[in-house]
Length: 140
Image (cartoon, rainbow, N blue to C red; front, side, top):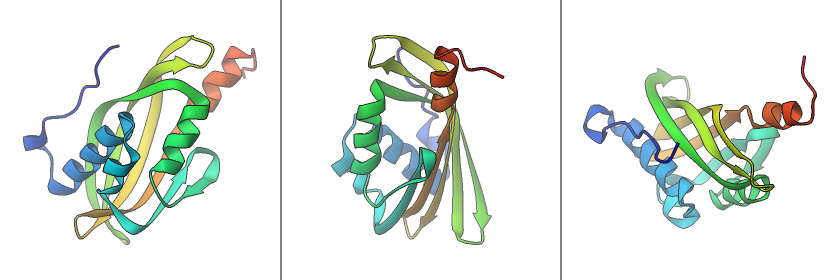
């Protein structure tokens, strides 16, 4: 896999476009540009329950986990939630582990709350831990 499959901007609601643009910036990675899509008081709950308040937190963690990683964004779902407008981005991660092993097909779900044109909350889940366990021979 060489390129992300980014949904056409014209087909997305405004909140989903904000999320897509944030994700594009975060994949560069360009945490400062990514931060322009987030509220100053954003809460980011990353894999494993790690808490951050700026996109540099997840970018730094990803640099420890992967040699490089990108998202094959497949779908954006937008709904009104109790906290505001909720956007789910789903798809697959692909990239390379630090040992040089390539990977793809690693499922992800990112949940965002968007208010006033800014991301105020982000929750991240993916199968990376499962893939690491499988590589070490630990399977159910």
